[in-house]
Image 1 (cartoon, rainbow, N blue to C red):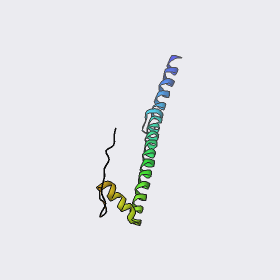
Image 2 (cartoon, helix red, strand yellow; image 1 turned 90 degrees about the vertical axis):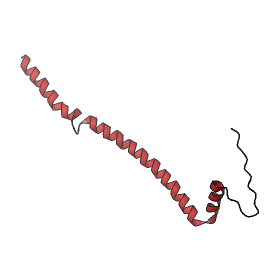
Image 3 (tube, one colour; image 1 turned 180 degrees about the vertical axis):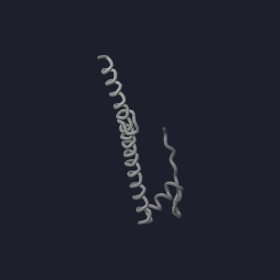
Image 4 (cartoon, rainbow, N blue to C red; image 1 turned 120 degrees about the horizontal axis):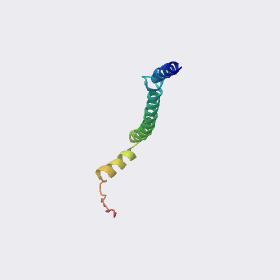
Length: 91
């Protein structure tokens, strides 16, 4: 009576191993699902960044105001007969 129970227990363990720990087992599925979720979040973040960059490119291509604004802010350029004044910020 004892041997059939042991044999059945071993058989159950042998059959369950691939389901839980094998190449296509549940643990692997959960890991892949977690990675998929992380990748989707990263894709969303990058899509938002790309949309912002696309809008900036369109703005720069469409008119001189955007180019002038960038030249003033990033390069400190001024128009003729214009005085540049920089006010330091207090922290």
